[in-house]
Image (cartoon, rainbow, N blue to C red; front, side, top):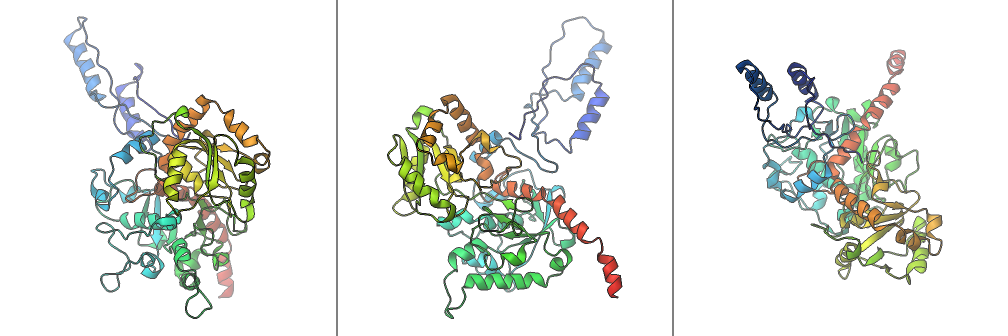
Length: 495
């Protein structure tokens, strides 16, 4: 766990008022205190002098002794704020999902305190919201006014790779005067002030909707958009200045940006996994793994217990897969006749998502098996269902694993072990009810970190991605500074 509670239970008698007030003032910039802890008053029944009574009264006044709730401090990496997941989930229950809630809170976003400054290129609408069918209402309009009307996402399977949509909405709203917290990332107009430069090309949506050949029969519209985007970048002063090292490219679908990714290798990619990338183009050191948006229905007010979930182990999805997905066929043969195991083919057709939701909500453990690439949306469906994930994917990379310990709420199984007859069933059967309950509780705590929504909420998937980007900024700065070691000298020689 990467959050810990901190409370002001009592004030040491040896602490002076002056030092205490000074210490509180110094820590206010680094500790996010929701409120000041309450300190119980004790009546005084002894006969003290008036002076003594006044001293004690002054002491309590300075400490602000009212019946205010106890404060909490949540540990985080520098310049990031991690919210208690219990508070997070409570916040979700009382938050509207429409854009009117963007301005409903009295806690406004202060752009000057944002963790990350982001310059976003003004690409034409055909690269982003135009792919959703949005049309500008006036000449030279590039972006929709997301405070009044948010362009609708087409949903369906396209939604699982929609990270580009949510991040762009968050950046667009970050500059509104009445924007609520959180504001981990804020858009800046001057690229030289930015920590990173954001390329708002909805590449996953482009792949999903425009990968069929156009009338010429030679290329697809998706290919044309990729080439146009690269041509645009290569002539920008920002690209020439950094060589792309500080640029963010969105390519969450494994096949998105397929035609130009080799040209963009210096950039920071936001991906679902590294399955179709050579390590010199994408790797865990420079790139971000972002969660899929889950497809099944989230389990709200889940009060089920171990015995309330009759299915021991659940999997429903495509069984015939390529590459590392061969394991699905083999596991199907091993598990299809096992008692209390549901392993079947499933798709979005014929109420497939509804059936999967019902099945996961009724299962103790849910299999997440490698498919065509190491990752699968099924992991995030399981998290949203509070069904303990059993991950069988040796090459998988997981979102935010530098701050999240997945072993607290997931079971990891090597492929070679999973293929042994009886191994998986024996493994999950031997996980005690108490251990399962601990993992189930942890799933309910962490699920908010994988939720996409607009307006974004504190430490949801959008804010967690921005925090992950912020943790990479020092590496970008190091790379750029090292690349400039001989630049001035070489320029003088050329002159």
